[in-house]
Image (cartoon, rainbow, N blue to C red; front, side, top):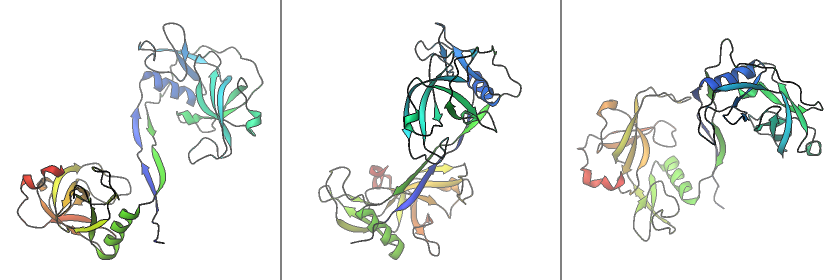
Length: 314
C-alpha cells in the first residue's frame, strides 16, 4: 500500500472589531457584572442587545439592565469540550432567557451530567475572576434555585468604556491529499519536478493535479511533467505582514501558469522590485537547501509572454 500523506493545518485570522454604542455598553457592562439588553419600540427586551430591531429594522439605543439569573429554554450536552470552549470538562450548551429579557443568550452551563439539565431549570451567571469586557466575562452559567429578583435600573453609561475587541477565528483540521496530489508532492520533494495530470477527454493538464477533471468530471491518471518555467497571469502586492511568516512587505504573490499546464498555481515572486512585476512576466522556480517546494519564483530574463498565450488562464 502506498504511504498515505497527512498533515495538521491551522487557518487562523484574528482581527480587531470596533464597537458601536450598544455593543460597547453591553461588553463594558459584563466587565462590571452588569447585563444590559435593549428595548424595542413594542416593549421587547433583546439580550444580547443589537443595534437594529431584527423584525422592524428600527435603530435601537434604549439600554436596560436585566437579571443575572434566568431560565433554560433549550439545551444540548457537550461530552467532549474543544480548545477555546468555556469549560474544559463536559458541559451543556444552553439558551438562557435572563429575567426581564425576551430573548435567550447562548452560553455554557456547568452541570455534573445531562441528567442534571432540563428545560425550564433556573440558572445563574458565574462571573470570570478576571474580566476585560468580552462575552467570556461570563465564565458560564450554574444551577440556581432562586426565583427572579428585582432588577436595578441602569442607564448603560460607564467610565472607560470598551470600544473594540479582538475576534479570534481559527480552524484546526487534518489534511490528507489524494493519490494525484501525493504524486505531485513527492515529485516536488524528491526530484524537484512539477507533475500534473491530463484529462483524457478535454486534454487539459492540471497542476496541481486533482485526480479528476473539474470541467469534464472524469478521472485523470496520465502524468505530465510541466515547467519548470512559467508565466505570471495575475498578481497582487501584499502590504500586511502575516503572523509567523518571515517575509518582509511589500511582496508579490502571483498566479503562475507553468509551461504545459492549463491551470495556474500560486507562488511568491522574488528577485525583482515589487513594482516591476507584471502580467506576462516569465519566471522560474528558486529552491532553498532542503526545501520541499520552490521558495519563490524569479524572472528568467526572457521576453514577456504574449497576452493571447495565457488569457485563458486568468
